Image 1 (cartoon, rainbow, N blue to C red):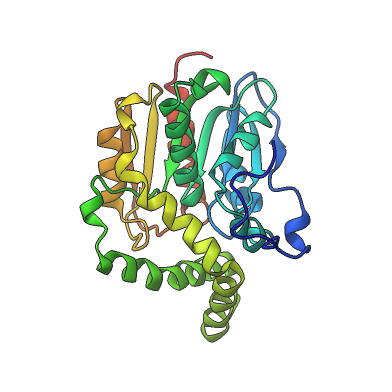
Image 2: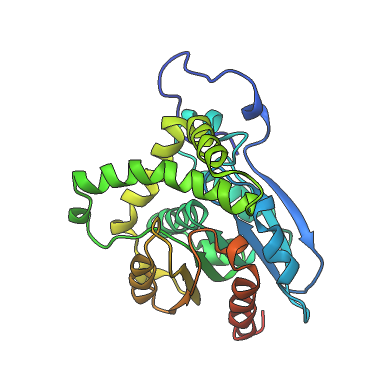
Length: 282
């Protein structure tokens, strides 16, 4: 698959660097089977963001777990986002799991990129669920609005302010109290600058597209999980998304913010394990 989208202008090819790495790399993280699970991370994270979750998941047996490093990961986001639309790269992640993706778990931008890609495929008359062997979705901390009218200028201003807050919260949660607050703030700003304007725009494009998602055409069971204290992807948006999915259900994790797979890794793993246990046999 060639890079999705055209360059912004003639000669706009970003310089070689971290972005010279493949846009998508899929890793096998845990054995299991015969079912499979694919994990998709959020903006400026990587496949490693799921490490604590994987330490708890599937203890009593479960699916073989794969995780993708996506073009919006921290070391590549500035390069790939400047090239144009990154959503089509979701197909490479889905295709990278031998035998079908099974249960696909997306966090934040990973969830929204997944939703948008599946929507586009359905709109063009394809069946991505059959093509990629998707039997269920788990959408963790997704962004969602039902109508275009909800995106006023105030919402754009709020999203821009929340951007650095998101990056800073990510640093703080990863640090686990080992880094002073002033350094956390500085590092959050550095991550924001590394993502850059194009990286933020690629995220916000997936958010702006949510009013047009044909959620009624998603045929598989979908679990939407939100953190009770998430001030970035509001829990109410997750609740609305679950209500708009024909086989959707909503789960709220108390005492958790945006990065549930780190803050409440055990509880998130338990919720996902229970959901998977309720699915029909593959």
